[in-house]
Length: 483
Image (spheres, rainbow, N blue to C red):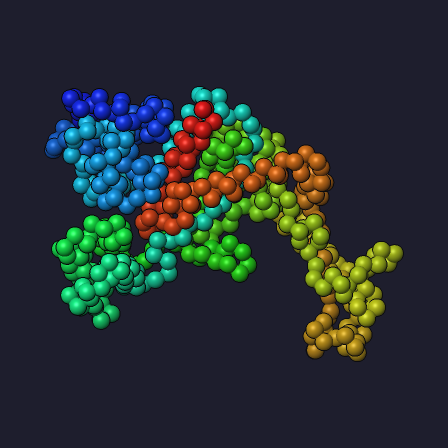
């Protein structure tokens, strides 16, 4: 068994932990709350059990990644801190005098041991299980939303990525000692990626050899970032900046390049499901998956709360067929009836026709769109084109030479009509006020756990980052409620 490779802590200094790591320390609390043996079970087939030297304990490696998610540090910096921070060593199951791993081991662990494992659902499921055991989950509502994460490299060429990071490193060095400018290696001036990589390697070697400057935190962080990019991501850089990242839109005039994480969360602020996609994916299309993942994790779902993105007709039908309440306002285009130039075309209820700005009444109407095909039908009103040709207001209204002039209005489906009635109730209005909770959770992920920017390239890397970050925020929330 792989768990037999873990060594017992037999150290004369172990008692130090009881002195310097108090009971209310978060890392001590995580160790006491979570049984990490599930890591052995999940990774059993990823290790050779009868050949080669013993591997580093997989639980320790997993905990290193969890520390990265909690404290938002690079591989190099998280390992360096575990060298002297006794709370880290206690959490990692190390003796105070034990040596630390090489940071490159974390990259190998991510790429080799965690490959093809559905870590995201597994870790969310573990925290939901803990919350149920602690009798924390009492509500039967989930709140859904999506948050975006910018790609690590944005839409830059591999060479631009390296140039940008090297520029930041030089700037940090010059702020400490601008006399080193004359000694710096010559910048690459060609358009060849391999030459840029070679220059970055020379720059790293020079700064590390320069008297003590590489140990200054202001320089160390950009230095480690450039090293990590060159050492771990060179193969990826040669292919593309980020093969999976896509352009998504936060609003009509605001875009980002990266990924989306679609979340479901209880009113107690425990995340129960997540789907990580490329940036262009539609929020509403993930609703069914989020509901079913939450239910699979053990959550009883009776009510779903979301913004207007989740009120599309298919979602209304799905929730209705599964006896769920959907607290999601319809798009205003639906409730108002989609039509343009509302101030120029008015409905005459007596005639049952629309009247244009010039006072001309439509001469007939026709219904378009097939009933029951998932899309709203439209009533199209036809005007006398001969009158349009002579109209004083024809500019911008009638296209010269057109054989017809029409005006269309969408018709609400039965599903939309029912949802319109529901969203006017006091119950609906009260429940929709719970939405702010998931917006606060998105902010916590971004600003406290580095979820604003991807730490690696590719969708698989984003899924790993999401799994560790969500695992961390769920554990912290469980501690807070259980206090």
